[in-house]
Amino acid sequence: MDNVFIFAANEAAGERPAISREAVCDLETTLPLISHGPLKEDLKRLYPYGTCYVRGIREGTDNHLATWDAMAAGDLVLGCRDRSIVWATFVFAKTNDPALAAHLLGANPEGPFGLMCFTDKPYLGEVPIIPQMDRYLDREYEDFVRLNAGKVGNILTDYGSLETFVHLCLRYDFPFSFRHS
Image 1 (cartoon, rainbow, N blue to C red):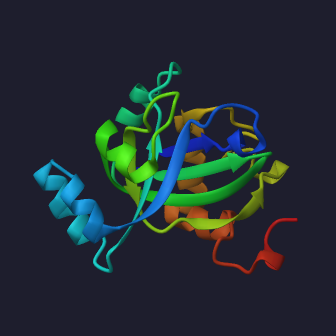
Image 2 (tube, rainbow, N blue to C red):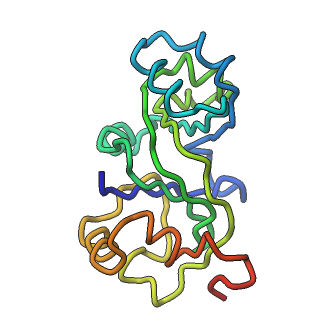
């Protein structure tokens, strides 16, 4: 798919309760917790080396379920904090399973992170959102949102694919010292 989703990652600074949580899990210990047969088979195929990456989102009151419902395999997910992209990853699969989330992501007093997506290994590093990137991204994000179609269209027109955007615009293939400054 050609969608981009963005998580505001400001909870680390104590600005608001966490809307998402991520974990790196061992596939062998994760599979027995999954009751949905096709998901088990997908995860075996998607994670041949046994390490899976999962991100859970709380349903919350901000219509997270509708945004999560629009997410599909192949979509790009970005983490944003303080006018910077701090991670980027692509969706492999998703499931709505609060019980599985509690096992993989831990309990949460505000509610489980049950809207889960399994992703590839995230690209990590702080990439400032500079004015030249305004065609593609807004400067700040407050929640879990889907990037508007116009900005996604600009990305695809200028870069050809979301993967190329991650590598060339966000420069996750370059050493930190060569990234935007």
